[in-house]
Image (tube, rainbow, N blue to C red; front, side, top):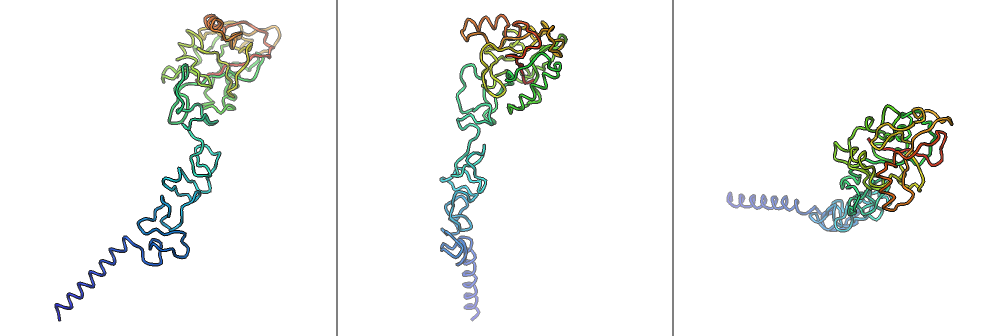
Length: 310
């Protein structure tokens, strides 16, 4: 009797253990994971096959775009109710990746797209954030008289334009100008040289390796791209008051503080009359981009400002 009871008890324990072990692989009947479609369920493949990244979720709901779960092999992303066709870096309403860095298209939020091959004369693009590995320079789209409120007023105008153009580090932009005592050679901190970053236009065209390069040879291409990414036409000018070496040179509308008709200010020619190789060569060698001629300080027509990220 004792032996038989022990045997029966052992059998009961084995059955209980087997049942407990089975519970780790199969849900009790009537629950999600039992392989049967129960009330409130839209699918049930089994306890081991129901997966949040699969066709049937761990809560026994069939996968669909918009459920905030990424269906492996079928969806690229899923942000649920936040799916949006236009959101940068987001997920489209069909659960494909939305516009983003390195999608092969230059988005409004980007300075460049690293998936595109680098062309001659173009600066490198940072693949991590689609920002140019360069310091940006532009020519302001607005026109000014020589009364700018001094160099400080010109700098403030560059900062405002950079912000309007949604440029990074907008507060660090300075006007490429001199006032008789200060000029780019003394006002600018050559961070481009220290970091190994060149200067570039908004379209990614390299202007110079650093300040020394800019002073020595001038910009490699005319600085005709504005803060908005548009291009100025020929026969435009920029107030400068400096010579080819970035030092004070020529008149400066009394420190860029007057538009009285008796005073003049030095300007640079933003681009040569034509884009022929000969004209561009002469324009560069002569330093015309900063030291072209002097005009009356009340002049507004076609006179702009150069702005450089410092």
